[in-house]
Image 1 (cartoon, rainbow, N blue to C red):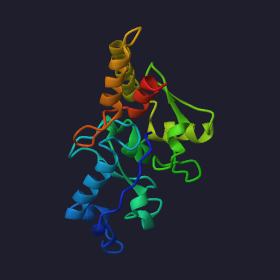
Image 2: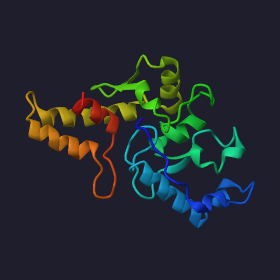
Image 3: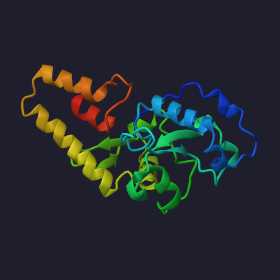
Length: 205
């Protein structure tokens, strides 16, 4: 996971009626403004797996599920943009419905916590493994979010192969600099390419 820094929350969010159902909120203009705001601060990437989330795709994710804590439904610190995970194979919809794991506040670290990014190592074969920083929390997050599923593993492996093949056995420094600009810097629309953390491990080892 790439560390996400929250910007100022949309003013309309604080004005939502107490106890309002989330499905009612989804029909308001504020929902669209919130979605855009979160997507911008995440540079267009899913908060969990770092796949690119195109405009109009993905969903606003409650990291602590609404079913667990209704009081955080409109808590900006609990919100992020998640991809839809294919057929709910990973990320937001997967964790709440199909992971087989329950919410554990003691083991869940959000992508907004700077420590979270250091829990994972991404390998060239597309797999993700825990680091020594906090293996218990890392293992929980991988299982709870489906980060080790075949859909993500195959895509990460293909992404790594593109970078490795482009660099070759003896990469030219100008080429490496170009790849770093292309894969580690935002574009003109302030968006990043998918799998930022994997790209960084390859290009800035």
